[in-house]
Structures are given as structure tokens and as C-alpha cells.
Image (cartoon, rainbow, N blue to C red):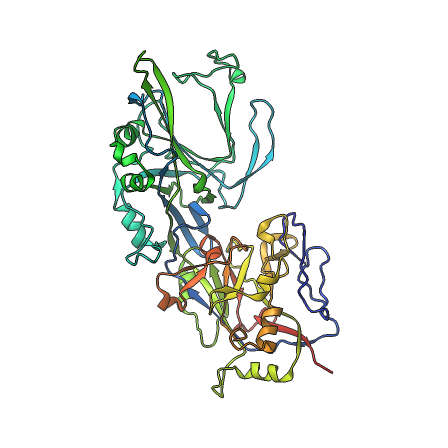
Length: 550
């Protein structure tokens, strides 16, 4: 028995763009059904599918970014680090008279929210309850890291050597090395004092962060404004969703910000040249414990508390300055692939196709698929496609079905089929406006959602993708510019709604200039059977259901 993994998925709207001759089953979660009664079937179409390593991938200004360490039993390990520019929330700040930071009481802290959902509301001073979204790792709640936050002295440019082209940064050792060779001093979060954070045993947490009202000396206040030591009498001043909270060295920020020339703070273009950014580096304390998640760095910030004197009274006033994490960013990935995965990449065969196909996100691999076989008469149309066009069939449905090979890997829950020739979505993807309560399960009719064993959701069964419109256009489309038999690409995805593509560093070796962003932002992988397996029940096939004209 199997079921599609749709955690509380509720189909809200479905656009039926499939021929009225087609009959498919939408009972339960079996959205892409097997009921094609009365239709003729052709599953003897040539399919050649093979794996290609992506190498380094463009990873600047991604829609979501990750930190942590992920250990897949088959594919190997991935470690993610991150660099970001900073901007002043208020430029050209006036710090006042004799501004200073008292390192014993004035904190400088960094906050970056995780991607989370509030599931319950606390009463009074009780915390709200949250659930983190998109967490990876068997030891997510217990794994610890040595977290280091550095001041970066490497400037992330907007444009490359050609001023008309945006600068691209890549995920691998070259660009990471440029950043790591331009780190300014010791980590900003390593300092001594009452406000120092314990970051050598950093853990991800789903707990809400609660800030309480304090006086200028850092003492807690009650609702009357009086100092209190009673925790229940504290007054909540701010609630923050779960996130990374780290205290930074106040003396360093006194030097970097308060003692800066006013000309360095006059606008954010100049400020980004002066304070070039932060680099986040996480090293696992135990290689057998893994945890990785997404952070919303676009909502991250540094809050610097300081105080200045009133020139008339010499009274100290506590103030704060906010520095936002905005501007250019780069996510870096360090991979240590298993020997089995490395061998699979090296042994892939684009001529005969592969027995097994390997999809892996980040710096990993995708699958390329060629349909309809050879073109023996050299007229730029494969022979099988010519025959189908001559038969003038009405395409009622068409699928590619990928059976999962469970080899210890933690399977991706969604894969994405696209036009790899033009790096564009297929017609079936474009036409499908179906939605679910979990956005990761949108475009249900297009498919690509993992089906798993009923009694063991760790074991994947298959992925199925509907390409009726794509196949119909190839066979019956009349526009020679749009009905070409393009090469297909198949990748894992962490965001089915995002069909955009980023470049790869070595396009000549990869065989294409781009790949889907959804693959770059996904750390997971999956293994499926290809066209060259001896197991006929698991063999990759294109199924076309059709009717012939009377």
C-alpha cells in the first residue's frame, strides 16, 4: 500500500485543463490516478535518462538560506555557511554627546529568525509555542555547533566586470575562500564579560524569545516601573519568533560604529564599503549528529545599545542603533560525498541511460531525460515522434513515473520536471493552479510528490509527473518554434512555486548553463530507477494515453 505524503493537505482549488476524454481519480490523496478506462496506451516510447553532477552553483541572493550540518546516509555530508551585507536602519546617525557603550550593561545582540509557524498562544508571561519549518537532521534538537560570527572585509559587489551584468557568486571553495581570507580579527561573538554568549555549544531551538522591560542599569522592571526580582512580575516588552540570538562584543562595536568617521555612516552605499558584512560559520561538534535549517536573514538585524550624555545636565540616556541584514548575500556549501555517490556520478552514461538516477540538491546532481529515440533520417525530428505525429492521435494523458530505490537516503518529498533546453517550466506546470494548505504541495495535478509505504513513511515508493500538455504540444502543436522535442531536466526542489533558474560554475561539464533554484536551496537527495534497469516493474517509462480519430 502507498500514499502521497500530503501532511494535512487540503485541495482548495483545481483548474482542470485536461481533455474531457480523460478520466482520473481524485479520491483521497490519489490526485494523479490510474483510471484510464477506454483509452489506448503507448508505453513503448524511447526514454534515455542519466545523472549529471552540477558542480558549484550560483548561490548569491537566494530566496532562502540555510545554516548547519546535514549527514545523509547515502549521499554524504553537507555543511552550510553564510555571508551577508549590512545596512543602517537610519543613516547618518547622531549619537549625541560623549556616546559610549558600557560593556557590563549595554548589549550588542544579533537576531535572525528561523522559518517557523506559531501553533499556540501563551497567557501572561508564558511563551507562545512554535514549530520550525523545514528542519533537517536526525539530531535536530540535540546537535550542537561551534558557531562563529566574523566581521567580513570582503566586499560583495552588485555588478561584475561588465557593469551591465549582475555579479554572480558561487557556492564552492573559491568564493568561500575569498570571504574566509578577508575576515577581520577574532569572531565578534567571542569575548569575555557578563553579556558573553555560549556559542561553542550552539543549538537550534523552537522556543520563543521574550524581552522584558529594564532600566538603564539592566535591571528588570514591574508594571509600576519599579525594579523587581520576581520573574512573574516582569513586563514583556517584545516577543520574537524562534531564531538565532547571539550577543556580540560591545567593545568591538564601540570601535566599529561609535568611533567611526561620520562620513562612513552618511549613507548605506558608503556604509557597505566600510562595514562589509558578517560571515556565519558553523562547525559540528559531533560528526554523527546533524542539524540544518533555514533562516530568514532578510529579517535579521544587529541591535547596538549605547548611551550618551545630555550636554546640559550630563545625565546619561540609553539609546539603540539597528543594523539590518540586507544587501547581497551568499550561501556556501561544503560537501563530503560518499564513495558510492561519487562512483554513480562518474559512471553515468548519456548514450544508453542509467540503471539508477541520482538527484541531490545544493551542489549535487540532476537528471537529464531525452525522449523519442534517434533521428535516423537526420530531419531534426526523432523517428518515434514522426510516427506519432503521422497517426494524428488525441493525447488524453501522459506520465513519467519514477520508482524510488531506497538505499538509506532520506528521500526528497518533491521533485521538479522542467524544460532543460530552455531552462523553463513545462506547460503542465504553468497550467496547474491547484493549491494545498501546505504550499510545498501546490501544483498537485502536475505531481512530483513522493508516495510512501503506508506502514513506513521512511520508505519511498514512487514519484509521478503528469506531462499531458507537454506531450500533446510536441505531437500536435503547429508552431515549429514551440513544439520542439526539448531535453527534460529532473531535480529535487524545496519550493515548487519557484521555477526560476540560476547558473552553474562549470556549464561545459554540466551540459547546461542553469538549473532550478529549488534544487540549489534543497539539501536532500533521492534515488530512482532509470531506463536501463533490468527490473521491468521499476523501469522508467513514458506512458501516453490517447484516442484515435474516427
